Length: 490
Image (tube, rainbow, N blue to C red; front, side, top):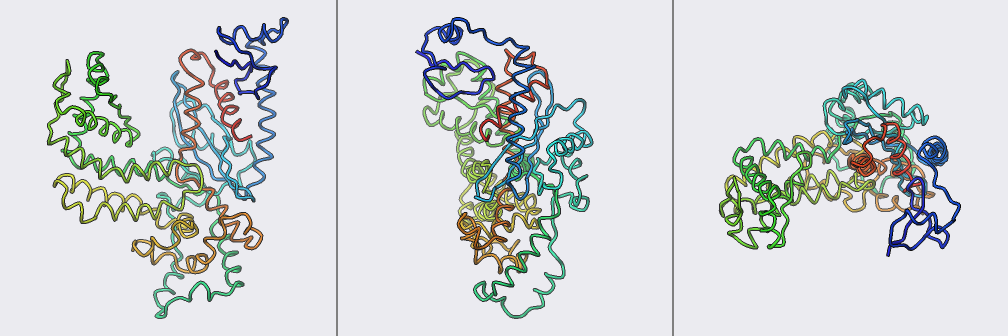
């Protein structure tokens, strides 16, 4: 027995006795049972009448919603459909006055030709002009692709910050170096001084729009990729694991063998390092179930020794903290403040004395990972949005600063002025008591910790453009994706 929903545009309606029918033969029988004279609208009616009306209504709601934020943070990424059409997805995030987060799709635009920096930037500008939000963009988050970096280096204020850096004021740093006395405790700073300096911070940090921020999640992908490429033995071992998994998934007989053990080997995706970790974990589980399982395969081009299985187990212990960080950063809003403390913790874990017990090659790999994390994530230590987010986040405050020398000398007055209020400004009730600090918090925490929100748009686009809908025009798919994604928010 199935509950069938009759809805032309695919949006799930409210359940009622009038628009639901219980049947055994699918939705084809529901119109006749609802109304004998009902005739479903044809494709042309949906495309030319119903869809434009739905788009107009959705756009009106979205324009009203966009007025509630102090500023917008954009996430951008490129996706190619099964039919071979490319799209640029632009997602806007902001936090309103009640500290409620919003994530909406501004556009999923079809890109023709090569994905050059100029074409990406032209599409980006056209979307912003359409929504009239050119002057309200705080940051733009993308991956570290060369075309993305070049495209958003065209933005105002980023010509000198190709690596996404925002330098600390040299005069301020010099003053702190010359001071022999400890800075005053936050409790000793007068409220008027806090107010004055926060006003200055708002003008200095948040009025320069359109600063490019490289996606921290994608940066972690590059960290691990570089480390694997530097260690040939680890690379060869991962290739061997991939071949073993492929031999299982390509053969029905081999699949039957693994099904008896209750484990399905996981394929790895080249653009998602965490999928490689899941692949390794699935192979380890197979060896835990039966150490001789690979000998029972009908065709296997890559035999893994038990010593290599032990190496894989140690490798998993090294990579697991990075996987936990990746999972937490996938959330849309509120996690920007965890990046620098997490980097501090990861560097500590990767250089911990317990790694002395690891095999030599795995210990060397962990050391390379720690060095790559320090190098790749170094650009974030000069980003004042990330520093402010970490200090203002009540989960971390300044605890992580004590353990990370990379940032302890770069906070200066910002830490001293804001740490007193760090626990209080996240609650809406305090926005009236600390209006300026409240604005700082809303702006900082509206910056997502990655471009995962744009990738979620493409997941919805993939579901809408399955094999049985391959004839969809790019313009039609863009409209359907806009309606689908924003229906969750509006």
